[in-house]
Image (cartoon, rainbow, N blue to C red; front, top):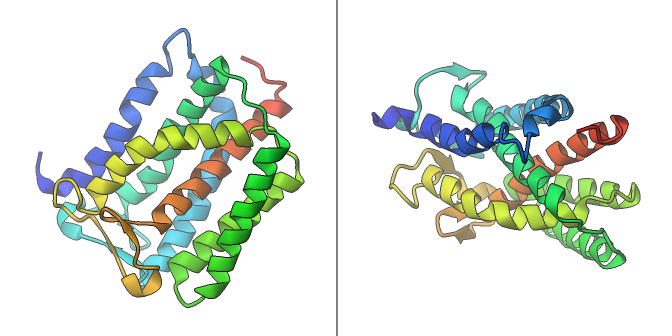
Length: 231
């Protein structure tokens, strides 16, 4: 495949198997689409605006050599697809996990969440000038504390699902940051982040991804509760 389709291929590979297995009788995730669609589109809009602003501010950029060529407000079409494909694949994983395992959000889980949120907020305030770090860590911190205050019951399941998701996360982000196939699709300005890399992936990407997925799954669970968890 020509190199300009690198990012598009990453998007497709991330969603193709979860999409196909959504129709598998034991999963039937397609029956949950009505709960997933609204939160996904809202979160995609939120992250798209964030992405547009950060691209214009030089926090990151995209290598046109590995982009198909369609842009909207300075972002390649593949970036918008990313905010659909990745949440779909991860919400599917979370849903399948919760169908077969019951994971209770205990007091320990809530304390862990509060401690993590506090550390993220501290790092954010210590690195205000590093926009990727400060904005990502602070937004995630606030959202985590909000979920603790709301006493949501899905945090434990989310954490387990997120640990599982880290495997494909490192593969897909490794491709986008040039660590696997030496095609750097997304370029980061290290003056705007901590400069700490996991292989070629900025450490902030993990928490950016956590916020992206947590917003999707929070909305998904909220809609399911409204729908009385209909199958």
